Length: 137
Image (cartoon, rainbow, N blue to C red):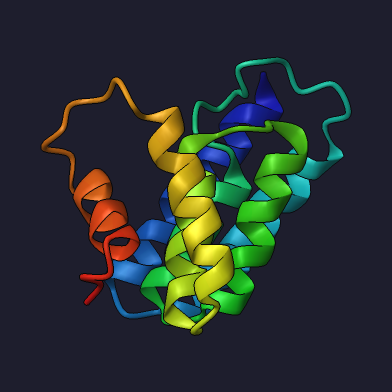
């Protein structure tokens, strides 16, 4: 339990640092969070904390315009928790931003299949559908 709280504290610190414009500090804290998470051999399912540290890191990296690094962290999330829709969506967004249309198409399609029963007004769904139908930004 102590490790989980440590992960969450590091994630919160990273998000606060990013909001304050301290990208280097945010990345340092996320490196610590994923290091703790990776050290937990038998992290139970669903993952605790609810959003895996690698996924949070991927989101921060996308916002920091570092899509290649984001893909690495979203992929790490999927190693431990296969089929996580937000990690799959993150890979799709990152792939789209670096011009990897094949990966983006595959991952957006996978994401839409996983979220086929989700509320249709979710922005993630609209974004994925826009890409797939060729109306990408």
